[in-house]
Length: 99
Image 1 (cartoon, one colour):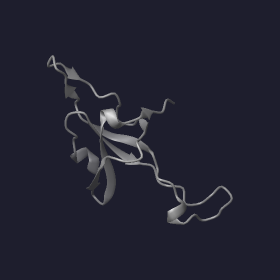
Image 2: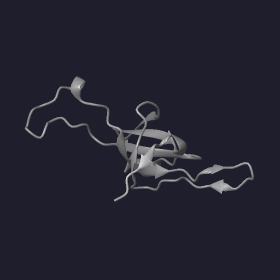
Image 3: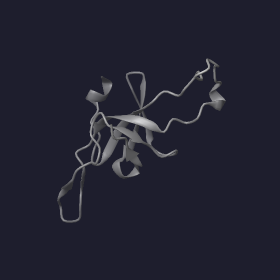
Image 4: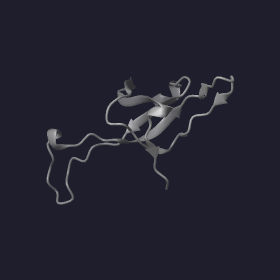
């Protein structure tokens, strides 16, 4: 609930990454080094959007609750109430999953 106290500005998107798989389907525990970087996340807060050259507000392309695909590198780590979130620009998000 800490993300409700934080509102991203402009076209920024606050996401919470999915947890890495620590156990295989067969029940084998995976060490941290063999766990891949998690590139999927859930959007928890979005900014109002950015202003284009004409002065119109261009809305963000994702909404709260969307599941998105992130780039391998980038984003700003944000700690809110002992939880880790990441802040990305809307244009940095690679895509969103359709349910």
